[in-house]
Amino acid sequence: MTTVLLLRHGRTTTNATGVLAGHQPVGLDEVGRGQAVAVGERLAAAKLPLAAVVSSPLPRCRETLSLALPDVTDVVEDAGIIECRYGDWTGRPLKDLAKDPLWATVQAHPSAARFPGEDAESMAEMSARAIASIRGWDARLAASHGPEAVWLACSHGDIIKAIVADALGMHLDLFQRIAAEPASVTVIRYTPLRSFVLRLNDTGGDLSGFLPPEKTEGEPSSDAAVGGGSGGSV
Image (cartoon, rainbow, N blue to C red; front, side, top):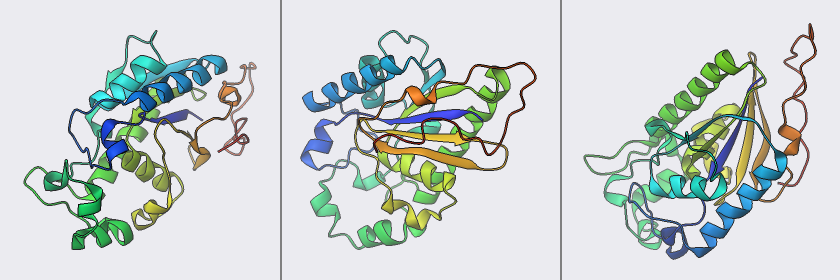
């Protein structure tokens, strides 16, 4: 019953100005740096034994982790959880993109949306690669660290929303109903039969409930026992 903490990067300069950053190498603004430090304090207080820390390769995620987890030196970059390839939409103001006919498809029927440009991808492709990456990491860490492993992945809003939709058994067309604010923590616990979303878009709750339970010799795991951490503020 491995548990992943999905951390969205802190607020960036483009978040603040309403621009779609995509794969641009933007950094955190002053608010975002403060958010990263604050979430780091929450993680430190919880004393979670992270089996792995995985990051989108983009600078805003690496900067968030450098501030939140400064003592972690073995962060692994994974292109599977990088931001969506928005193609020609990259770097454009959201207020202008909202006038594009494709915008309505992205909002109401994202599984049919493909962004324009040679280097672009569809939202379905984005969702598939992100889910495969997270579930792959989860399976490997369960095999190497045991079923109670806790780990963290730092990624982007649309990526986290797609992963949550999968965990909830929701169609991708409903994923715009999910929120993942800058520096928020979303927690998913995977089991052999189903997944449990234990926190969603949490920007201030106590994370100590996700400490792995002390092992008792001979005690079996239970798919139904989703454990601590199901409460708290979201």
